[in-house]
Amino acid sequence: MYFQDTITIYYMKQGIFDRFPQLKQIPKEKFPKHVLIIPDGNGRWAQKMRQLPIFGHRQGMKIIKEVLDNLKDLPINTTTVWGFSANNWKRQKKEVNSLMKLFESAIKENLPELMKNSTRFIHLGRKDRIPLSLINTIEQAEKKTRQNTKRIFCLALDFGGEDQELRMLKEAQKLTKSVTITQKVADKLRDGKGFIGPSDLIIRTSGEQRTSDLGWLERNAEFYSIPKLLPESTIKDFVNAIIDYSRRERRLGGRIS
Image 1 (tube, rainbow, N blue to C red):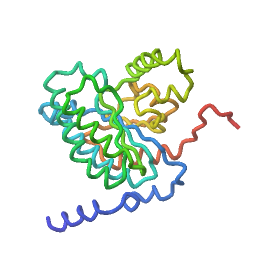
Image 2: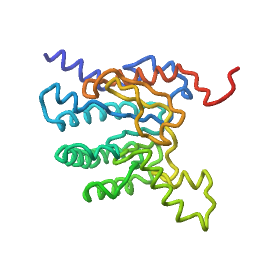
Image 3: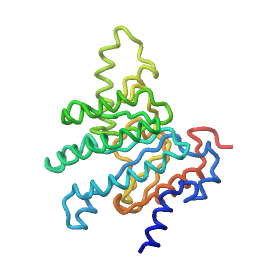
Image 4: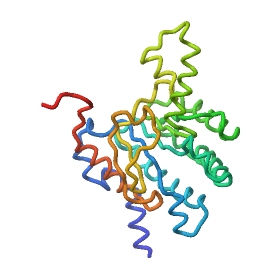
């Protein structure tokens, strides 16, 4: 048992490039600059385990934390996790309340790590429907990390592409008499105030082959499906997604020669 524990600790302390040597072969420009994760399957996994949904969400959050801890060493500028859709309010109230508390505690617990790694925290989504204590925690994290410049972590919470577009239109209506709506102005009206562009790679767990309602975040993005529920996924699955992305030829509407 001691020998096995020692091996496990050694493995965890190794850097991601040592654990996955294939990553060393990837040129820096072939890494996605913005990775968006759709963490799917927590509820189904909890059901398999004959547990309440929140049990699956807790386990899923542990997996996401491990993934983020590893991805920070790669040349990826922005990582977004879509934690709660604008449509997720349809879930049972008890599950939603538990999720909101889980998000709040996770932000507080990981804030020192964000500061240590010079990571800026940005919330994508609405702030008028989530609990006040969570709003305060989000705003404090955004304010405290505002000067961090090494990388960006986005939490999409109460976010939906259609809802985002409606909110943008309402804001644009207020400006049309005094401001010409250009692409630059439109970007600043979006969540993230123009700092967050579309994702390069969308990774979804649970084997689903759809991106859902991501709006501008999925524009021209590559998609990769991990055929496991999130709590059953490992860092290796996410590394495989990045390796697969690096092998693709992205033309983005360019001429085929």
